[in-house]
Image 1 (tube, rainbow, N blue to C red):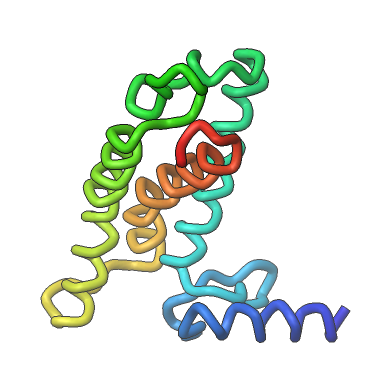
Image 2 (spheres, one colour):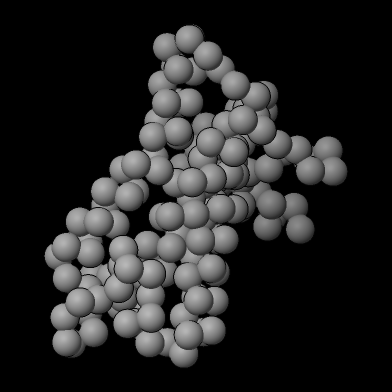
Length: 140
């Protein structure tokens, strides 16, 4: 178990600073990524699972997807317009994460771990949904 945890922390160190004062603890143990990354990854999993759930409920028919991502061409693939919409939506929902990061770096405001995690949720959910949409070929 200790080797497994060491591998998880090593993987986390590639993508996160893992500072203890900026991380959540579970049962007295630090999580392998900081609070902001935890918010991103957990909400990303929710976004991905939500997209796949909608696909299952609606019978895997791309034409039943939300209008922002639904394919418009006859081949079932997304058009460049839907891809631009997805990128624009990602840019919009990234704003809270970017603002919280920059205000912390600039010393203007440095929220709590919970605040950092919550401000990352919009970006995580949409990024997870976009990854799922690409994976299911609803968005290319």
